[in-house]
Image 1 (cartoon, rainbow, N blue to C red):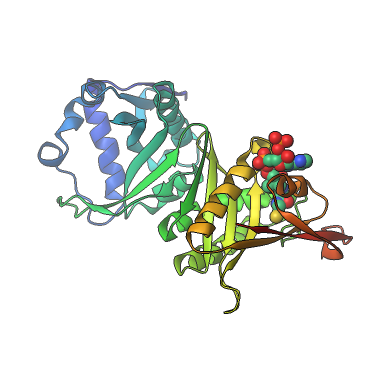
Image 2 (cartoon, rainbow, N blue to C red):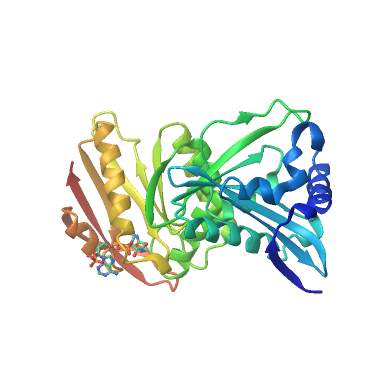
Amino acid sequence: MSLGLRAGRDDDAADFIALIGACWAEYPGCVMDVDGEVPELRALASYYAGQGGALWAAEDGGRVVGMVATKPLGQGAWEICKMYAYPAQRGSGLARRLIDAAEDFARAHGAAEMRLWSDTRFDRAHRFYENRSYIRAGAIRALNDLSNSMEFGYAKALTGVSVVRLDAAAAVSAIPRLAVVLKDCVDAGASVSFLAPLAIERARAYWKRIASQAAIGETMLFAAWLDGVLVGTVTLGLVMAENQKHRAEVRMLLVAQGARRRGIARRLLHAAEAVARDAGREMLMLNTPTEGGAEPLFRAEGWRQLGAIPDYARRADGTREAATDFWKRL
Ligand SMILES: CC(C)(COP(=O)(O)OP(=O)(O)OC[C@H]1O[C@@H](n2cnc3c(N)ncnc32)[C@H](O)[C@@H]1OP(=O)(O)O)[C@@H](O)C(=O)NCCC(=O)NCCS
């Protein structure tokens, strides 16, 4: 059997309709009325070409088993549409190849941001998009159709470095990628609360807690994307004693190994400082391992050093390491 991607054609209509119908049938209440609600399926290649977009079909042994489309929305934003694969193909890497094709096409045509809508019932799809660094963005939209569809909006920056403060919905949807970044840093020896090797479930549980704190205003959570991949994060801790409400704490400044020395940590710090200042905080504090690369960053960013505390934390091999406190007036 050979799995291949090719341009989608208008005469794939019957195959596309069967594929989408099979995917919708997995979820209760999803019904398909092609001519009443999705007439574009009768000639889908023309529909996307007419809007400056493109359509792909994935074939396995000559049978259509997956599809995806993309189209421009204006102002550098593009949309992923009609992303479907038969259940038997899941886990095969097919969905990844499909969305890669759509993102590469959009990028080559100047896309700076990707967006998509996904039915609130399609929870498997949400995990897929979240692992691809998409985060929840904006309000739910209701289609007022036969399926009573309500959809989550997802988005991500596709090119260059972008830093975003995450609201509660965005923070929850960023958990899978934040966990990957945390595990990457801890397993490479970073001294950030955990010991290596870090189980991915523990990393997810950590970010779930931070996301719920972000939802009630106890923390502010930021994430950074490099060329469409969520690679960095920083947290601002806001819960201070009542006589110290003018302070905030910088925590968990992390950049995945493959994305370092591109100024991403610096951009994260700048974003956190600006938001802290806007929120009335006048001073930031942080504690960082004395050795490990972050100290030069804080000094270069105008942070004042308080001195090193020996044996502050334990490494995975049981030895101890020092940590340094820094502070900065905003
Ligand atoms: C520390 C960390 C966040 C830096 O991320 P980064 O995106 O590579 O940092 P930046 O590219 O923004 O670096 C900005 C500046 O900081 C300094 N810097 C950063 N990493 C450095 C290193 N390993 N050695 C020396 N200087 C370093 C440099 O001055 C750099 O500017 P330059 O590249 O123009 O010389 C990243 O290495 C990391 O995640 N480490 C593990 C976790 C950790 O220790 N976090 C700190 C806890 S508070």
